[in-house]
Image (tube, rainbow, N blue to C red; front, side, top):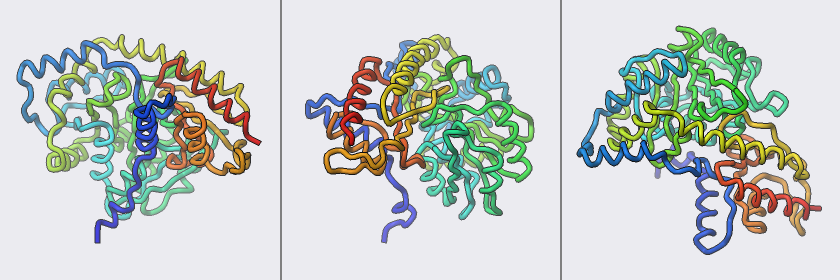
Amino acid sequence: MLSCKAESIKPSSTLFITAKANELRSEGIDVIGFGAGEPDFDTPDHIKEAAIKAINDGFTKYTPASGITSLKRGICDKLSKENNIQYDSKQIIVSNGAKHSLTNAFMAILNIGDEVIIPAPFWLSYPQMVKIADGVPVIVKTTKEQNYKVTVEQLKNALTDQTKAIVLNSPSNPTGMTYTRKELEEIAAFVLENNLYVISDEIYEKLLYDDVKHISIASLGDEIYDRTIVINGVSKSYAMTGWRIGYTASNKDIAKLMYNIQSHSSSNPNSIAQKAAEAAITCSQECVEEMKKEFAKRRDYMYERVKTIPLISALKPQGAFYLFIDITEVFNKRFNDKKITSADELAELLLTEENVAVIPCNDFGYNDHIRLSYAISLKQIEEGLNRIEKFLNKLQ
């Protein structure tokens, strides 16, 4: 008999959809892929040059398991200057991407049966990671009317004697919504009152629009700082998804546990990628601003265009690069003889009939929504939305 735990873990539907779209493209089919969870920009030159220099300098050996000191110091400086949070290098664990960082965090704090409150919609890997760490994901569904953000009242209703932690993702994947200072202060008070931890996933923090400011819950006081594990990385902000560098910032006790886990599971993150990440974090941030301006243009176009398409609707995202689209009105409509009753069915029809790949959000906690990424060119966005509108107009 194989591992029951392993058999309970679901594969990533986003990776499956992306792979399917790529497979069709390899067959010469013109597929518009809205599934991308990565920027379509190239990694900036100065970052690539730092990696090339590392190779030429022979920086290709093992490093400390938690990452090189210069990178960790750069992360500490970034957190101090940009987020008003003070850490030393012993509190930073650099890992093989933010997914690895998240898994380390859950494994460091959870015992068998501990519950983790995850507001829905959520990034689909959170519940699976909690299960890998022997925890129990507790899903709390938010609504469009509350901007898909969890309230303290909902947290109170989900609280049990087994509750150990809460996951916060701001800006959010898939909604692009962000928590305000007041909302975070209320959540922080609840966390402290109930002796919980916060896993604060801030991977999209630099991709914010319309003068929205990112606030880390860890910056709201010494007590909540001590109960928060900040998750971040270089994948989204610097177009470095394939470089696989993420990091955590936490109190020293938790950091030590994550170090111990990582030292046995994967050892150090890639040495060359660490040097590239150091250049990304410590050098000019102009490349991020240029990318963000382009994302803002695409977001504005996609949002305004979706408002004109029948049967679907969305809130305007404040950050990240996704539109979370309500397809409730599509349900019970028919394409030929087929009645559409789920996001999965709509996604399948869009792919087979119009060669458009979208992400059905059942695995994000919402069976009546799809996610569209605007991390693709404006030309592709326009053509893809044309195809979606064409399909929706065929429904009866």
